[in-house]
Amino acid sequence: MLLSPDTAQLSQIFSHAAAPAFLLGAVAGFTSILHGRLVSLLERIRTLNDIADSEDKRHKLKADLPRLRIRVKLLSGAIYLALCAAICTTLLLAVSFIAAFCGFRHEPGAAVMFLLAVLLLAASLIRFAREIHMGVSEGDHFR
Image 1 (cartoon, rainbow, N blue to C red):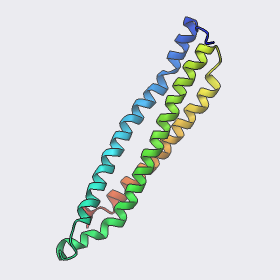
Image 2 (cartoon, one colour):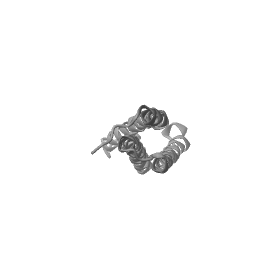
Image 3 (tube, helix red, strand yellow):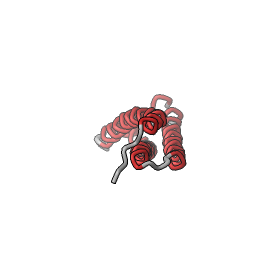
Image 4 (cartoon, rainbow, N blue to C red):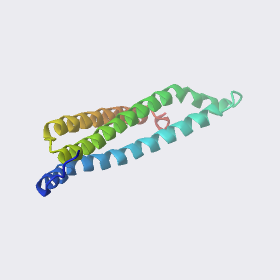
């Protein structure tokens, strides 16, 4: 049976939940940006795939398809990692409150889960940086 936490325990949990809550909000915004870029890339791929082989002037644009597919993979991976960070952060918040209601210490586990969430977010940011670098360094507008 769950125990009712005292006011001090709840106050401590709420103060400890501030950083994960901000991280969760940041991950949500970041994921939205990633999704927008992914949709744009997929639309570009569809547009290039619709170019007929008989269109000599535009057919050369299809050479960009392999690079665009790599960028899609990078963004998809970044979204996946960001969502894993969000899930880890959400679990961190849930476990913290459950631990408070049961009268257990949550700090050691919370620190590990928060670190894992931050590392997942960092991995997502690295993939995003690679995608941006690829898009800027080899983009159509520089040819």
